View (cartoon, one colour):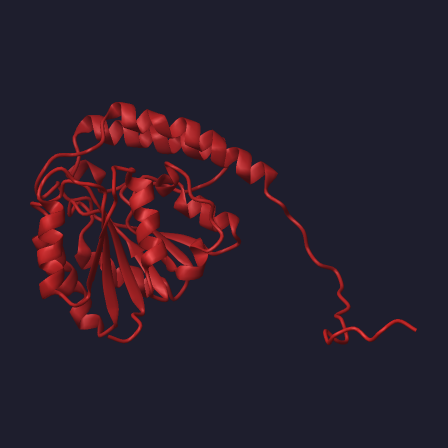
Amino acid sequence: MSTPRFSIVIPCYNEEGNLPVLLERIRAAMYPLELTYEIVITDDCSTDGSWKLLQELADKEPRLRVQRFAFNCGESAAVWAGIKAARGEYVITMDADLQNDPAEIPRFVQALAHYDCVSGSRVGTRKYGDNLLRVLTSRVGNWVRNRLSGDQVSDSGCTFRAFRRECAANIMPFNGMHRFMPTLIKMEGFRVGEIEVVNQPRHAGRSHYGFFNRLVFLQDLFAVRWMKKRKLRYQIADRVEAQSIDRAAPPG
C-alpha cells in the first residue's frame, strides 16, 4: 500500500458494538473521494471484546491498523498514540461511538483547502444526540474555556477534526489535551477554522463521560492558559550564515 494521504485516527474503549458499523461507514464516506487513506485505531485496554474484534477486522481490512495499550491511559493518550502512528499527510480524528458521522468526512476534506486545521462544532446540533444535562454542561464548559483562554473555539469538546500532520509536530502532549487541540494548534501559528457537524445518538454501548469528567478539564484549562501566556515569541530581524562548515584549518 502506498503512503496514505489521510490517516483517520480513532481512540477506542469498550466500543465492540460500534466498530463494524464505524468501519463500514468510513469506507462509504471515503470511496467517492478517491483518496488514499488508512484507519488507525488505538484500543485503550478495553475490558470488552473490542481488541479481539479489532484484530479480526484488521485481517479483513488492509487499510486498518490497530494497536493496544498495556493498561488504560485515557482518551488523550489514545488520540496522541494514533496521531504519532499516523503516516498520512492529513489526520482526521473522530470518536468510535458513531456520534461523529463519518459521512461528514468529505466536508472536512473540502474545508482543508482553506485551513490547516478544521474543528467540528456541535453547538447547533448537540440537542439532537445528547440529553439536556450534557448539552448544558457542554455550553457552560465552552463558555468558561473561552473566557479563561481568550480563545473563540465554539466546541472544544468535539474531537471530530482534520488537520495537516505538521500541525501536531510540536505540541506537548498531556492528559486532557484532546479538548484543546484547536487552541494548541493555533498557538503554533496555524490557521484554524470550524464547521458545524451533526451530533448523532450513540449507536451502541454507553457514554464514558459524566458530569465529574467534564469538570476535570478546568485544571487542564489553567495549564493551557499558562502556556499561552508563557509561550516564547520572537522574530528574526536579520541573519548572516556561516560561509563554510568544513573542518577548521589549523591555527596560524
